[in-house]
Length: 458
Image (cartoon, rainbow, N blue to C red):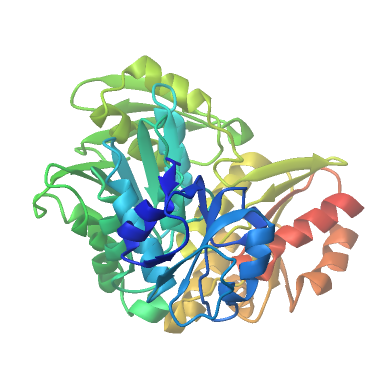
């Protein structure tokens, strides 16, 4: 980040400075474990933790300055800025800091595929630009400001992911970033338990436009029925991408190469390009199209786009494929929503071919009254795809099984377990050389732990 003085920071957040105004800061953190010498530690008060309990540890770990709420009792030896609310101050600091940069800012949101699309965009742009991107899933009111505060003078473009749990959250994030380009990947049913309908989810995602600059561009997935209906209705220039014809960016002649990735053509108003993605899964073509749209807006040519796509790896797309003793493990266990699970099942079938396929699936959460039908729909698809083994883990996974059992001719062997510990012996007993196993579920189901144990004990 740019070096800021204690006085600068205090002014940005309208706080009370109890420290030498010439103290300089080279990092902002809310976690004492990630502090570098010369950092500002912001004490955030959460539901299960309070950063104010770690002020002395922060100083020991290198913090040159701390930011605390003004009712905090603090030693005079600790240089501090007092504010009314540290979370609000973090947001205010990030918004003020962003104004120090005159570079293109890209915002990515959507129900699923946000992180993969962000990674795709950043990878493509890196063929020409020094790109800053939000790390991991730093996409909320804490993570995104921290990502903004990592910008420095070497960066030429920045890509930020924006998540939400309800209304007004993306509004806040967009007004921090003030993007020139906004992408919405799709409107699914993630978080529908809280928002009630896909129309409300669309409304919440459209909050990304609240901070979009007046001459900004909106990029939408034209294959999404709700997003495609926005064409011509927004006050911003709008581009639609997808695999349907008559879109601004149209992908056609898609050829899956299994684990090796996908070949495809892209037609734009200006040109027709033959491209490849190293990451498996037809769904990744949509992510690539969003990245290509951004690249063209930023004046990148075909050769640069191709070079950028060549730098893509499965790891960046949150997909890990490992072989052990002739068994292939597809670890896509970061999260799970109906659309992403269906895409993962397609990847399983593309990679496995005629080999035995396993779908090891945990619960999909935050679906409310839609949970039963959403899980059953996945179960029906598993049966239709001819997947040989289905292992359901969790309290909601019973509906996967029910969906499979609706097909009286199903060849899928389905088994339900409460925990990953219960499921592991069953999988170990039946899997054999040549099998391909997919692991997918909401993060709290810890299927990544199950994958690691199977790999280490296999």
